[in-house]
Length: 205
Length: 205
Image 1 (cartoon, rainbow over the protein chains, first blue to last red):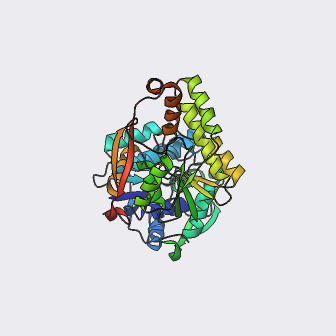
Image 2 (tube, rainbow over the protein chains, first blue to last red):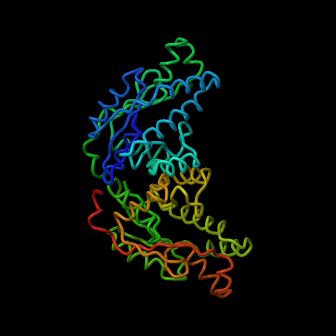
Image 3 (tube, rainbow over the protein chains, first blue to last red):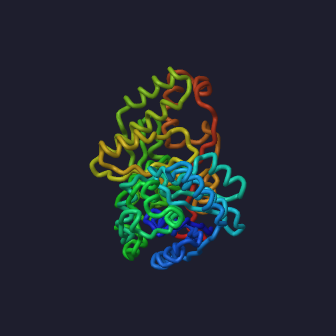
């Protein structure tokens, strides 16, 4: 059974792919709106992890609508959730996609799909939507990451990560300058995967 | 890393163990209060799955308190949740137990631990509590089960399953007769695992 794992190059989506690998044919999928080469950055990481990877480019109207939302709200939550849901719907509409996996953890708040949205997407598109880390807390994820991955961590403005926030930040930077980004986005730690630990590929010992 | 998977002999706990197997040293753990030989039934299933298994026997005061709750409520939800939480705390208090896994799915309502209970248990006992199927819907679980397991399904009164409900039902039957069981417990479909499909052990193709 093939599974399409939403992939940002960060530790959560990488670990999700690793946990699914023994049970599915994993492909990694990164969404890019062509503002920054984030798809290409993710492709390099995917290669290091040893998974096939492709970039999807949904219509930029999604990014524009998210831009309108974030400027109106003054905070990123609704805009990020909107992109997230739109990208999953875009992927689910692909007839070759039957199972979609998402790297959100138990404690994640943004982006996250609510139960009614999940059921609606599964029913409308005939797909399964799976979150392999949904039942894992942060500490458990960190232990598994330590076993399986080499990562670098840094503040969100320093790490080029292939997530929705990166291009939304770039769009705001282009139109309003860097000051506006600091106003809207809280600084938070991002992770970027450098390499897979070979020893951890089959079994943690 | 060793992981202790709460095991009823049903499809959800069996599939949880299978999903964790490539990443952890899995042991299956079944709770029994000695009213029925459910631990032994689970042990046979565990053997067929190929995992080490042990039976824990927490104090029967837990079952007695659940009995009081269910008679007062007239429905099983709170009593089952109480046993579930008590058993996890009992297991977490074992110094050799570092990671506990629970087979609940995305759509399960009973038994389920709330977020504050999960955090409290992880903090007080220094364990990780993991639900590998928490991000999987019923249909996705069924597809994986079909690949990995042979199961039998039947109504809850016909299948001897090593879950909390079985002994609680038995206690009520002993003290009030079978009519009381039908009054309190809604009938629902239970699964019991017969065998593991050898072909599915490593990779779904």
